[in-house]
Image 1: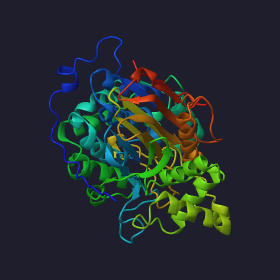
Image 2 (image 1 turned 90 degrees about the vertical axis):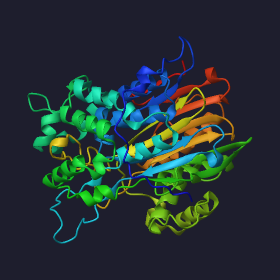
Image 3 (image 1 turned 60 degrees about the vertical axis):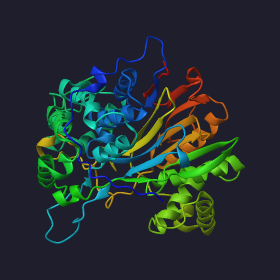
Image 4 (image 1 turned 30 degrees about the horizontal axis):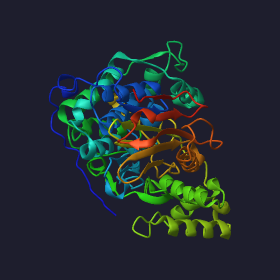
Length: 470
């Protein structure tokens, strides 16, 4: 296992080079393909690609934009995991894991009051690490789109409006949330309403000018921790300093025909569930849904040991044994929190697929003081979501990427969608599981190669968006 940590102490951003030195492709040229649950974030990624950025630039920009456009599932307080691949990568690329984690003092007598314990915010450092390893510019230069969306306002999307409607009673009971997400009559914002987040734009601007490290070691860390404590989240500056994402080797499954599919590794255990389910689909054995949940339930029952065997063969055997034993409801999982996902591929064949979560819709349902950041819920109080993503390649060229969400079905949805697109079906052209939602991209002739053959799709039951490759 490869494990690399990062402090997130980026240098102050220079003037926006993406605008000043990237003139973009000529009209009709291939720029890349993007798919996500939230259309405004898709257009941010597409804009970065059209200005000459690569897939990592676009993915980092999308992750930070989602903190503005879909704070119910991916605020600045959120966490997640990403896979990244570029043609020629050995081991199928790299996984960047920045899953939500509890504060270190949660439950300790004498610690700050926490009636709604919050997760340590991992999004910014996670995106920073991925972008540091695969991007082409400074992290600050991918932030202006998110800053503009927060400062100038967005139109509430169907997904955000649906999430608001689901929890509006409890959500709007909090004055901080009500100030941001309610209409003048006190009801929740609906699809098409304007949402301006001035304080959040200030946080993003500070990260752009001072670097990501300011949120974890600087003045912004002080403001966030104070806001968290005032909101009952209980986080301290020591929690922020210790919030280190990791770079890991993905799990692999040989898909035949020279293709290898890389999956997120534990502790992003939805990737494990997807790998086990995908292997079963290739063999025509077992229920993908049961095996995906069984493998995750078995792994969690063993305490989530990331140092033990991580091969898919071993985990499949453990999952089947767990199912056969009838333990934990035959491998079923309790109701799991919501998440969101996206995938992006550039014209050269670099790909990134990510899954993000708040551990609960709108996390704790509270804002961290004057930062405008919605606090994610502590994973010590909520079951962990299934974060799943997969990228298929032949060692020299990209072939397909799938990222999933959808509570308990997320892992099985990624496995089933990957199997379908590799067999030649169009991405996201049908529902693959009852609850699973996917964003998928396929390039049947490979990238680099025939980029015009690339197609993308977002789950047909939702109102996401897929665009590209021109």
